[in-house]
Length: 178
Image (cartoon, rainbow, N blue to C red):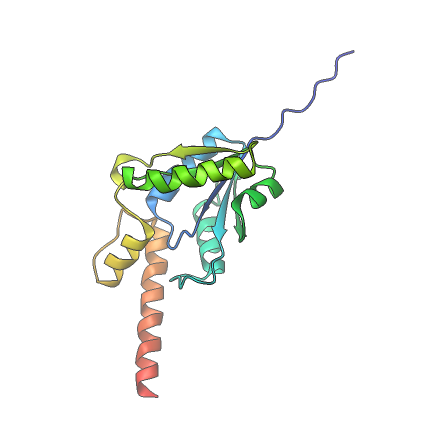
């Protein structure tokens, strides 16, 4: 009598700040969700940065955008990425490469992660060509200066950007009155 072992789940962690989530991120998450049984979008908690969206807001946005993809999970982490990946039983870390300028840093991180945990592979993915030049930082910058970001972020993110901008303006106007 032959007993078959269940196939181990292929879990990948896609870490980042996602402030805000861009269509480049969405492209990598969608394609990663086809390559792995589960992809965990891991939002970095970094107290030293001053993000536009809170960690909870970023998690909620990503969950809303990927509500129809049950193998896309959203979580938060701090500390060493490989420690987090181990806890998630991940076999891979997914990293996006937009341009050659990203490669040196990502290569160094991948080698260090391999040194710390040889069983977890780093998988580099390039976003679709039309998204190779966008970054969260650039999106925030051009949006706050009044330029449209349609087609660069999911519609839900664009709506949240407008709401955030309105609340910031309201807060600024309110503080000027005080």
